[in-house]
Length: 327
Image 1 (cartoon, helix red, strand yellow):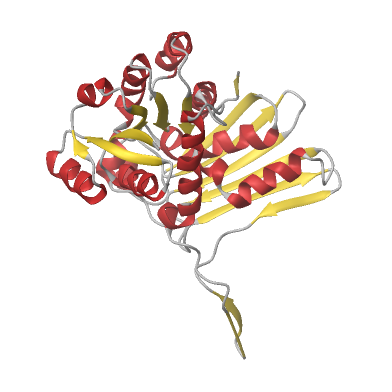
Image 2: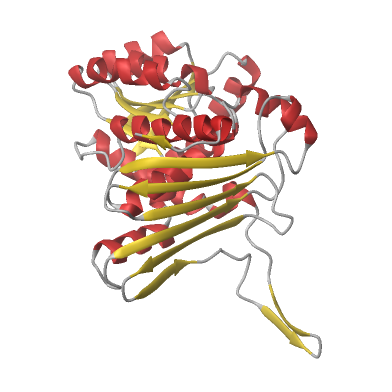
């Protein structure tokens, strides 16, 4: 069993703590958070200790560190854990500044410590199956990709103000999915964004709606549709159009029960937001971190974090300038 420390006792930190506690290969040893009450409550729930980051890193029994703190601390805390020789699990995004993340890449690599960058959607069973079948050539060569990611409701404006913007906070997941599914580097980015849902989001300097087109060197295209509010639930779909047909991953429903009557047929609601929709993916992600601590190569690493961040910054630039950004 491997001891791990958790940095961040907020919403995502609580998810990871529960999954660590449920995994027989891991034990939550420490919880680190400047909010003392939140840290104490989470530590008590899972039999861990509250500590400072330095205290947790100084414990030789700690083999891994989960960085689930505020975005502006991700890179610094990951570097600190790596310098202490701990395997790193870092929430997305790696940092809010692409140049800073790139500048630290060689320093991180020189430490020889593995990082699992937490793009959890790669661990969704449906999306992983889609990727495997695409890579296997089941429907011939991939030509175009359509990724739909619409949230059920917008986040609080206070969150928006510190999120880094819709491309770095929300669409960055889809940029990673696009890279993974396209199977080749993106060379061009064109994006448009708007405030169509909540004027307060616009007043905070962000957008709530965006469309992004990615092009690869071979000409493959990917369209990403992003919205902070769908009006019909959490919409997470991917369609892959290939030479011999299409592969599609559909939404997850609360149940498979349908109602049929004179007025027609209806199905159950979509699973509510990411905590439910990606619950299994989060658990699989933590299980993979146990593999990483045990010596396996991370399926997603530092370079993937930099690549997704580069696409996010390119999309934001394209939306501001109204022009294609070439990478």
